[in-house]
Image 1: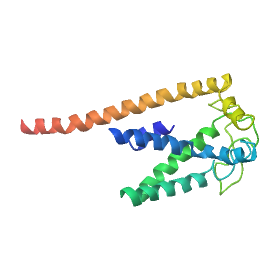
Image 2 (image 1 turned 180 degrees about the vertical axis):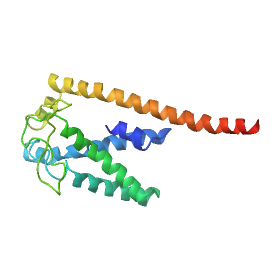
Image 3 (image 1 turned 30 degrees about the horizontal axis):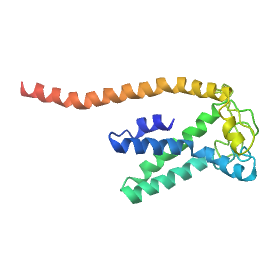
Image 4 (image 1 turned 90 degrees about the vertical axis):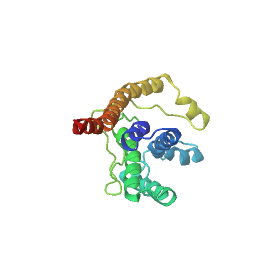
Length: 189
């Protein structure tokens, strides 16, 4: 999703493109950093899908932090970059909303701090990810056949999205590079 968001919201070319793709992928996965405190307690799932990380409030905070960074370090518009990065982070929350969830609390606290209620779609698009154990058992457990199948389903859903984005970007690029030339040529006749 981070790659799709980068392509849709801030397409770039050249070497800077790969750095921005990596940054968008990182921000899109930031909500899952809530596994880290659980690793410290020996239960990686202990804090997963809890309030700050998987919520609108957490996403807005991430947007403000990254928007501030880009405004101060690169002179970019604070509000624009805050909205971009908040959206990228929140995309993870939305995708988790549309995922099957087999561990409590079910769903995500999507609208925290306005509501602490965990919500989940009645019609999940994505399979659950099986998680168990602690430490290296947890990490190796992510490579189960079920989880690899779930990843394949996600790829099959997102490849058409990426193809559509590429097609739209190409049409916009062609319009920008051929449209004005046609007007100039027609004006000279």
